[in-house]
Amino acid sequence: MSNERSRETPPSRRAVLRTAAGLAASALLPRGLTAMTTAAPPATGRARRDGPRIVVIGAGAFGGWTALSLLRRGAQVTLVDAWGAGHSRASSGDDTRVIRAIYGGNATYTDMVLRAWAGWHAAEERWGRRVFRQTGALWMFEGDDTAAATSAPLLAARDVEVERMDAGEVARRWPQIRADGIRTAWYEPGAGYLLARLACERVREEFIAMGGTWRLATATPGPIRGGRMAGVVLAEDGNATRLEADAYVFACGPWLGTLFPEAIGTGVLPTRQDVVYFGLPAGDTRYDDGRFPVWINTGARLMYGIPGNERRGFKVADDTAGSPVNPTTLDRRISPAALQLARATVARRFPGLVGAPVAETRVCQYEMSPTGDFLMDRHPEAENAWLLGGGSGHGYKMGPAIGEDLTAQLLDARPVPEAFTYRAFAAARARLTSTSTRRHS
Image (cartoon, rainbow, N blue to C red; front, side, top):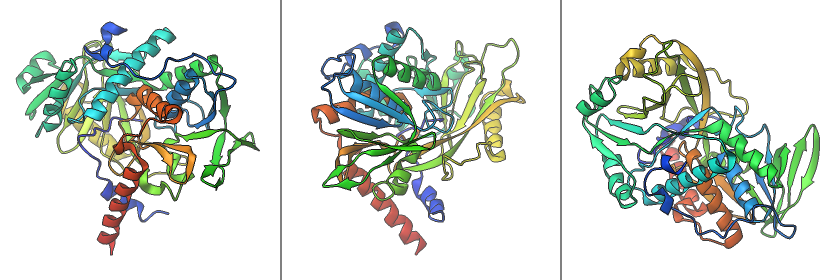
């Protein structure tokens, strides 16, 4: 749920896998975004009776936006989720997610996030409700700032503003920050955060209003015969029914490996991520989202946070991939070590919040792919089933763009970007497994 894994700092999945081996408004948009339009055919706004029948399993950021995009292109879509959109076990749950454009010089992700940004803005206009808060995003580098420096030319070419500053400028602009140890900083004024749980529900509501079919149920993939999947089995209120369609999209987040143990397995690995909300002083607005940015501090660990928002408090989280978990049965009480780390981060960077009480905590998860890249491709043995996942802690913001891209793959036969293919995923998983096996032999 913290969901801010930065592609420029790839997760240490070898260490995680070694542990797992022992387990069975347009003015608010950054400049340049208005040019980032999609090439998809115009949306019809409602399913057609002759449209293809598609079942999407998972109503998080990936599945919800995909179901909505398919429906807007005229497909007959059924959206299924076991606990509901943005529920507390989902990687798309919790209240907030960062949206930023610095992506370590990766043009594929840079363009994707800009398209997603435009999609979020368009959705706000349709919904009549803001889900994006423009606070700016401040990257504070204690060491190497290559991740931002290599992004700057890409952003400049796309007319997206980003500025470099030193520690002194950080302290002048945000006196709430202790700038000791900051080597360089980069600021994205157009960035901010999204209201995650609320947006998941808004997507579901729009989907239903447009004629989509919503089912609260668990889904199990049917058998694969002759290169095609033969339906899914839905369990609702203790009753099992079979649902058949022309195509199936499995956007099941941390459950993807459980549903497909051979094709996915631990290649998409759920990891524990603890989040702390510190209570702000009464009557003090210096740490609210109107006066303070989203922040990312890169040092021995990558820590990030979101200013006081939605009356929850000052969010602090560790971006390091945690221990493997079962997302269904995980006891979601924060660990003492995670709380100690959050307090140490506050003491080091935000001295005015030292001693602040813990207002709330969350135990969320990432679903890590071997490289941190997304997976959005057909099942290797079923031409009518798509596997969509590997959000790896940075996927939530991409929801609108991912929905459009999967729709274009399914309806228009658009090629899958190589980094997102099952082929690339399987190769990376094999390399990771091989390395882990050799180290244990």
